[in-house]
Each structure stands twice: as structure tokens, then as C-alpha cells.
Image (tube, rainbow, N blue to C red):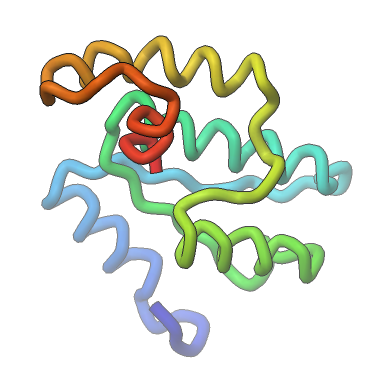
Length: 120
């Protein structure tokens, strides 16, 4: 949602999320918030939505954008469903182990490609 400050975007988003039983994920910016903190938050968000299958709304205000690369990451999530080189091998293995059950339930082969597609 885009609009002037104080127009109720945040409140309306929270209300809509509550009505749909979506979890709200927002980022708290502190003085020490940096690129590493941003990547950690994105990892947490993507694991929550992709491997745990929790419907989630990301609330991100203009004050949360400390670097232009943050917008590039959001653009990648919107367009591709992922951020390149965000997940380490260990993270992906954890995600795949959680997705194995869902892959079997859907009658798909237990390949990394199917799990990656399901995650995205």
C-alpha cells in the first residue's frame, strides 16, 4: 500500500491480516541494523512462509529501507520468490527436511527441484 503518512495504511494492513489469520512480519530498525541483520530477517521470513507454510504479511515502511539493496531484495522476492545467495547450504537442508513430508503428501518425487519449487 502506498500513501501519505497517517492515512491508515499500517492499521488497515494489520486489520486485513487479522481477518485472514495471516501472521504479521515487520522489521525493527535499530541504530546497529545493517545488511547482515537485513539478510537474517529475510531468512527468517522466507523460512516461516516457505517451509513452515505460515501465511504472512510483510510490513515494510520507507523508514525500514536503510540501503537501496534492501529494495532489490524485496524486488527479487516479488519477481522470483527468492533472494539470490541468501540461504546457506545448512539453511536449505533444514528447509528441505521440513518440506519432505509435504512433497510426499502431494505425491511428488522427493527431489531438490520439487522441494525448491514448493518452497518458492
